[in-house]
Image (cartoon, rainbow, N blue to C red; front, top):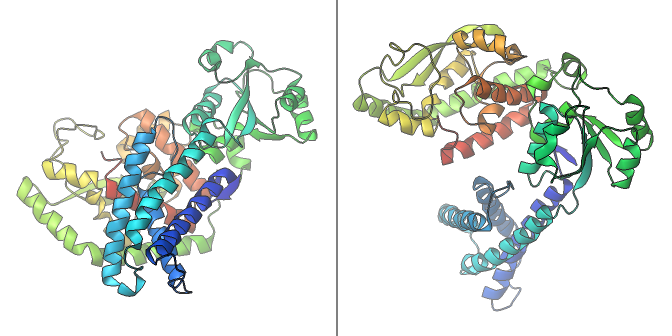
Length: 464
């Protein structure tokens, strides 16, 4: 497994990405060779970098069409349509780039020929990779010990994420909980935790044991787990494993001891200064670049419905500090006068016609750039919440107040990984991601979140 920005990825996935990069560049070079009359005259030290640039543009388009996410339920037809869309987008971007910078262009006819070659090569490469995923080739075999929510969450995540790099060899339940795993018996052998753990692991070719036992239930098989360690097997706590696997924590399964002794939650002075400087810089740049768009949206809102252009509301920031947040108004005026404070839900009748559009593409969030300049918010952080909701959520959700130890953000790890929620359970799932971010936050992670936010904004996903 390879660790990149606090998450672990199977080496197989890295090999797939690098391999596809190689085949894309090779396809364009072959197309150049064909269009030049099977001559190498066009090849030079300056030509190859141009080809690499074209390949990079294509892979960016593949990424923005979710073609590097391999989840269950995605058919080859869907993959084919996304691939054609990505190729079309790449063609438009490259045409624009070559128009603005003619010196970056390739030889005549190369893009047309390479498109046909690329279609066949990329589909073939992905077909081979999908076969490897379906058959679990190169997957690491693991044993999961436990019957509670954490163990079940791990199993479901592995089932859903085809390219996670793991196969479940065995599930060991806690005494009295065998019925919990009835629906999973076709996935792997299910048996009660036994004294022969290390022998069964060796016999199954297992190199990793995931311990997700309930804190107060059953008995931790200390001797058996110690023997596994002595025999060279890796023994991992369930919370640590799901953090590696999913980029989130499971707050309802966490115990204070794990949070206290695990890595992370380090906020150095240098890191805080770097984040503050980046916030101010990006806020000033975006205010200048986006001012024409914001002016158009302001006029549009005014023409669409009665009421002010901006919506202001009190939110709780770092340390539960109260401040006024600013957004473009996307609901009717005085939307809460009759029903009081409630979360916005799907099909909310209070949302205006313009509101539906600006919420879909997160344009309503733009005035919060002013909150960033004021220092109340950061570009990246947990979503700011209202004090009236915080009072209730702190009572119902463990560790909820941990998200108040950092500045709230316009975007964040939870916002890009989980669509807008309007219930307590949604708040729990968002906190799972927020805690991961707070535990592992860094400047590079913030940059990754911003890049993924751009993707969400362009495609209007996760709207509320």
